[in-house]
Amino acid sequence: MSDVEFIEIPEGLIRILKNSKKVVALTGAGVSAESGVAVFRGAKDALFSKYKPEEIATPEAFRKNPGLVWEWYEMRRKKLKEVKPNPGHYALAKMEKIIDDFYIITQNVDGLHRQAGSEKVIELHGNIMNNKCFQNNHHIGELPLSDEVPPKCPICGSYIRPDVVWFGEYLDPDKIALAEKLTEQCEVFFSIGTSSVVYPAAGLIPLAKECGATVVEINPEQTEKSYCPDYIFRYPSGKVLPYIVEKLLNSTGS
Ligand code: BJW
Image (tube, rainbow, N blue to C red):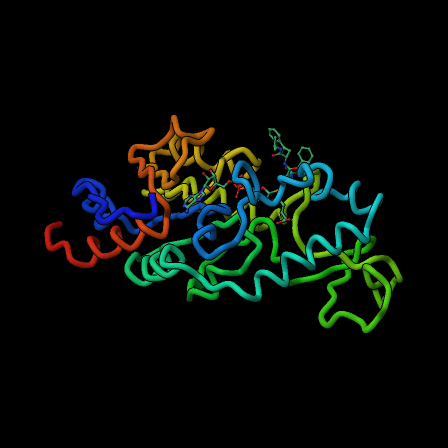
């Protein structure tokens, strides 16, 4: 797929986008794949190829082996400091400037949408660079200097953990309520680079469809929700999204 030269964007989709005020993009790990960030499932270098998700991204796993889970996140944080947003992230940031009310609802914790300049971003699963304590959710700014792995909360003494949402944990109710409201009201809903298996995020795709949005899927592979879209692009998002933005900017018709 990487040798793709040109992707035709249907006129019909551009017309709908030009006439839309409310547009939402739900993104997943695939949108960051072209930046060199590993996806979670499937690929050879997938983040869950060594550990199953339920073995590592859960409160139970942290209780059982806090050092292992902490080190896994430290390894990912280190890698993230070396990567940059890709053309897909930048194209989405441009869409925010072109479309009246454009929101990104991301499952990603890597912060690359904001780095690319997007401002209206809902980070459903948190941000890997932030920390809180395990017992009481005390927000931890600067990590305390300590030889302990993980370090401990200066307020209550419980272990510090990344401020991300693990399996079995509730998402921030304000964030998911806003995500659902935006999804119900939007005219176009993009699903980009997500396998669409993790809830409640995956449920937004059929919700958008039920509420009448034009649904667009951008993913080189079929997904669990590929029965929903009106338009499907089986290409990497870093290739498709810049073409959509270019055509949106250059199209003259209404
Ligand atoms: C490209 C590309 C390129 C490659 N361009 N594309 C309803 C039904 C069944 C179960 C549940 C349900 N409701 C809740 C649950 C339980 C559970 C769940 O969903 N389980 C399912 C797995 C069955 N959900 C939860 O526990 C959630 N909490 C919750 O609902 O609380 C209430 C509750 C509690 C208990 C019981 C019931 C309800 C919390 C979910 C938290 C998910 N956390 C993680 C880790 C975050 C921290 C971290 O980063 O470590 O979030 S798991 C992981 O998966 C991460 C991701 O955000 C998430 C989604 O993955 P994503 O983004 O889709 O990545 P991949 O790798 O799966 O897919 C990548 C895609 O990209 C592929 O399709 C590629 O083809 C594509 N791609 N290159 C475009 N260049």
